[in-house]
Length: 315
Image: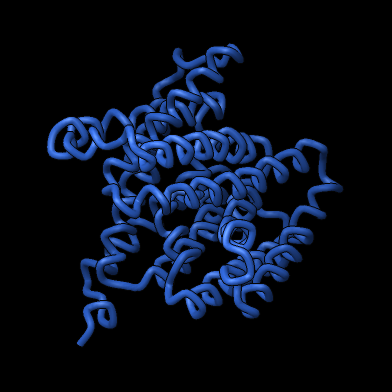
């Protein structure tokens, strides 16, 4: 029997931990009493530092190959990741955790459109995926339309979250190229390092305070590094050895209600009732995009890309 057809208790536990880890990302960002750009810098620089002993040790031979085209893809991915973090993370602090998390979950939609732009008609999403794209866009319109009547700040938060989703799609598109020949550790080490360097420059130029936070803020930043940045990503990658990328990608969507629930219980952010149907349509549309892409490409590329970006962010 195929190992993927009967995931064991350890795999189920890994997936549970991963979903909880990525679901905590947005509430922790909203909780931390620090500028979003500073949180993004520390999140990536500390993850880079944590991976350095491996890159400088067992992976040092592979690191020497980064002067090739693969290294360029890693750097480009890091630049896109910096844009993702510098837009999505402020959106969490400016608006609703539930809406920001749902909007950044539209990444597979933009991933499919990138495939069309780069690969032409042969790479176009399937008919089912296009139905999902329409549903997702309708859900975005519904959810963000509610925010138009709330405040200009809420609208800005929605726009930033959408840009963050687009940047995450570009990040995984470049990452997919780099990962063709590089290990996950070498790729993420280079990508996180590039992202941290860019964010450091932005913070210094913009006069963003990088230190002097209280203990709870540093605890939140460390929890982000250990949880969403390292543990969540690692557990999803472990699970990919035992379940399909499509299954992992759909499970990642649980971050949307998970983050909303944590924000409600922990931060007292009650989702606006009138936006909930739109968020539900959005999540359903993204799920259809993922499943439609899985049928056309046998699990690649949209599903695998989302699994690789288990933070969008992707979350």
